[in-house]
Image (tube, rainbow, N blue to C red):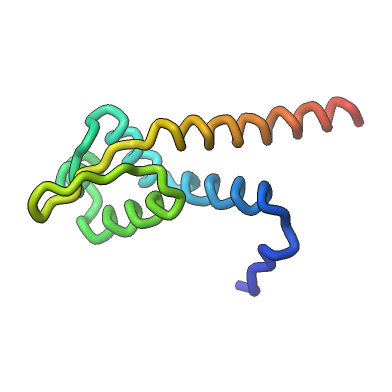
Length: 109
């Protein structure tokens, strides 16, 4: 793969691409769906729910944390995860706004 040229794109384009890239894996979608139904679950819960290995789940959690979509709560050695609803709504609006603008631009051609 070539060198990423993020610097030639604006902040909106880079942020939208990062959000969709993080969400662009079925395992991460499954993890987020499980967390949305079972607030504050830990990695072991996600391993059982997804059937993925613990290191794989941890890796996907790290990717989701890159966009700060998860809140964390420590209990002893365990970390429990919940979805940050404020950021979820912000990202949902951003993605929706992108599609609306593309659709409007397409109709104007």
